[in-house]
Length: 531
Image 1: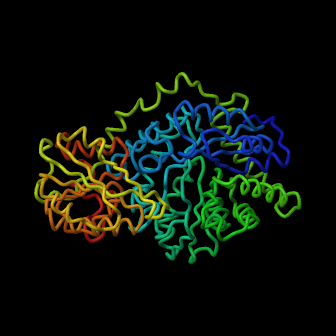
Image 2: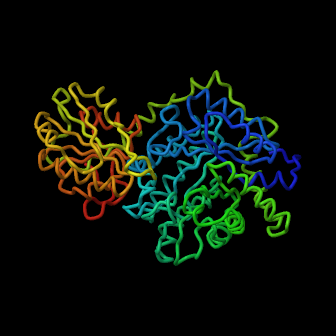
């Protein structure tokens, strides 16, 4: 960043915020606020994405405003969590990458994602996920984690981080100091983790400490409460951020909060408390992704606190130094990061064959007791799925969406698709219908305990009618706990196009399954298992 830029107090304060907005264009009100107050960061979600060229026009616009160029971030972890759908590289989920047991795949995936985000004008990616998923019932992490074993997480996360950097974007390790041991989702409530200090340092803190030592660009805090370690959620805890992360590891990168509009925070704390607690804990950038009025209030609160001396300006300056160093590493403010729209489309998905290769290596066949895999693709086949529920969405809002249908029809000659209600029931007509097909493939995708329970209830009924049922876990591999007697079970670790293509290659015998579980499914499969 141009060291000659002089910032007023208000312009310094602005750098300590990341804002999100709704719409495919930057709203005039938001643009004026970002520009006049020198807001440091902007985050893009799928709600801001329509097409590649539209995104480039948007990022070019954002990069053209502000005294110090706003840095644009997005959640593009790969697999389930990608904001650009199939427009840009999805790669596969972290757990899917780890299932290949080949660290170079993590480096490749990170680099592909990084290059395509850079092409679109994105400066930073909120990844890799450093959470160790040691709680099987975790409702929000799951396949977003590389493993339930800290060393596997560390080894694959390091490569993913380096890949992102090679691709031209900043990385961010999340969700510090670990969201992998919770059974609640901080989007909805405060997750509490009552683990001991010894367990905490091994299963939660260890990956973050390791990535801090190799100077990952930034970290993101979680809103998780560890009552046996600190009496404050991590985002508000000086012990977690100033003592452990800063002093113990010596880390001096930027620390973002997770979005403070999550219910864990916004429902329990006032704007004044959010600002005071975050800044006192050591947060550099307060992230607020949704409401403009709330974002403006947070800014005004911090500006007021500093003007009144309730927060020292030197505390703000400490964050400014870290923020400026991060921005300087990725572009010079004198040359604003404006992307040429004509070259964008030639670069996006240009490495899809590498994405496919990683996906091919990830598919994990855990059961094939009757040898039904590979199937005869000429026979009559029924694909069953259930209505889909987005993360943090009520089951009543389930949508009639198929993850397998479109691609399945390209691989199978005679296939029907049926999407069932998420009520655990099997109609009499379906019961009769099951007898008409040579193969039944059931794709399960669990986003919360209720969905998992209802899908499992239906699966158990179907198994009684068709013992040779093929169950495909399109998300968490843990689903088999609810129907452990199933004879045929395959895990994809996600539903992106390349993953579904690889699934059908395995099912039809075009390729063999090479994936191995990077997690333990307790009392059923050990870590490292795969046929």
